Length: 289
Image (cartoon, rainbow, N blue to C red; front, top):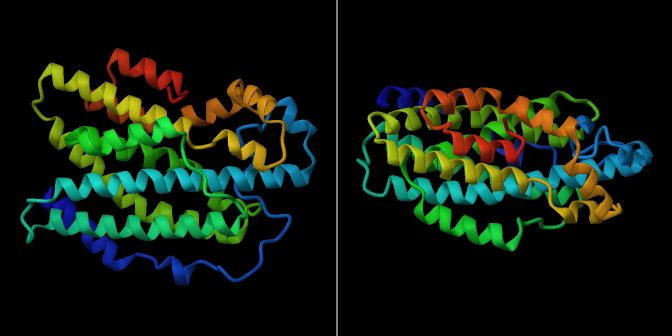
């Protein structure tokens, strides 16, 4: 792990971004610019999507993008608290300790960047449902070891795939594309560290702990993914909320995108011994497998 942590520290020193400088916060938002690739909209491919005007589609992708960013902030706050707790008594001179602080600093900048991005998209302060917020409080307090790092990996892997599409899409607002590029580059290091931590901490664990961790990680994944686009998004975009919810919940196109984005993640969890039958059922319920 020391070698990996040192390599990531070196990479961070060579390629990191300051969103306050790198992102164009001043240029006004073009009315024609989407907030995300339309194909990633929860309604893309549905009958309702076909009925929407281009202006409504643009507004919907903006609100969805802002909600994804707000969900990212929520989980990054959880991530930071878990990591700080994990390194509390760690050797301060170690590369692992210094890398962990570097990752926490990255996440702080990302959260500010996402908050400013959501504001520029003219979105409200989206939060997960109250019950999910409270479950998050419990999770950040109790999660440790492979459970904490695999949950980090789940959240970042799903975001990584969709943001790689958004950052290359010229239909998406330029400042959103820059935000996505920054997040993809810097999170690639975080995901590498999380994968190594999971494998290291799973080495030699017993059956009970493996099954308990697998279900806990899957449950975290379920609530993260199902919180990415809240019902309030549809109201904010001026849509019929109940109809939008019905069509989004049955949207096989969007479900297929989620499954595709998680293929590599599921292979990794399986290799780590964390894709147990009960966990598979939870991932399937979230359309991740």
